[in-house]
Amino acid sequence: MKESYGQRAARQKNKTINPESNNTVRPDRKEKSTFNLSLDTLNNLEDAWVLLRRKLKGTQRVTKTLIVEKAIEIALDDLESKSELSELYHRICE
Image 1 (spheres, helix red, strand yellow):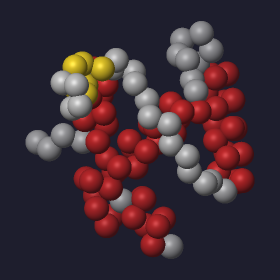
Image 2 (image 1 turned 30 degrees about the horizontal axis):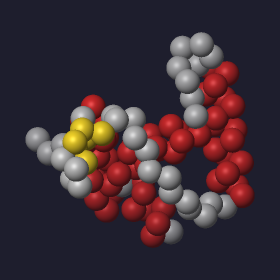
Image 3 (image 1 turned 90 degrees about the vertical axis):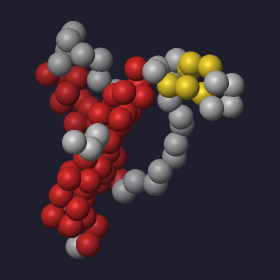
Image 4 (image 1 turned 120 degrees about the vertical axis):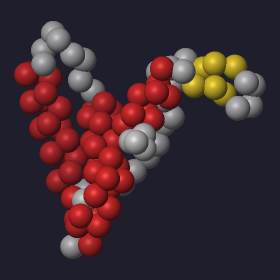
């Protein structure tokens, strides 16, 4: 069975090799990226962040970065498994 985007991300999070130095890098290493998002999307992200923080208070640290990362993993897994039938494909084609 082919490994999904989320599975690859989880595996890479556990151990990553830096190709330049051939050393193991910290598993939680992040790369800063900038994307332009609509105000509606930013407001929805803020609302989701507040909701998840309230619901998971004390059990899970929730950040906007975590929400975006997981949402992208879900969308890419769906695209990979369903291709033209995926939600991402349909929303882009609208």
